[in-house]
Amino acid sequence: MVKSANTSPPQYKPPMLVDLDHGRRLEIEAWNGALVRYGKQAGVPTPVNDVIYACLKPYANGAA
Image 1 (cartoon, helix red, strand yellow):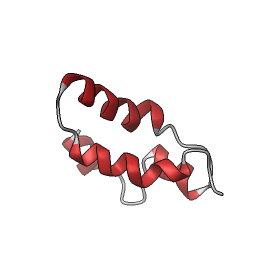
Image 2: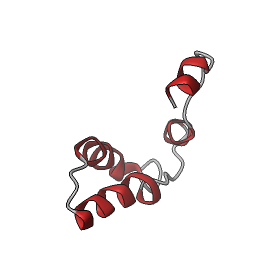
Image 3: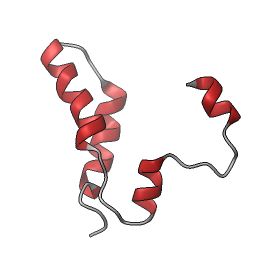
Image 4: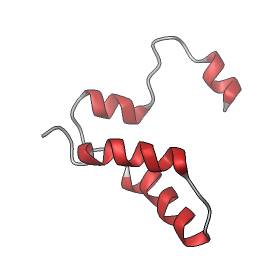
């Protein structure tokens, strides 16, 4: 993952960021939401994904 990130062109944006920029629906439930739920079920803290999920959840259905 690190090697891939380090070799990406400077203008590269992750697909979810592109969707956010264009006001499209986000796959936040399928990615970060699922990880947060699985972490809770397993008793594993997921603090970074908790924050990402909380910040992006209002945009899950696209721009308001």
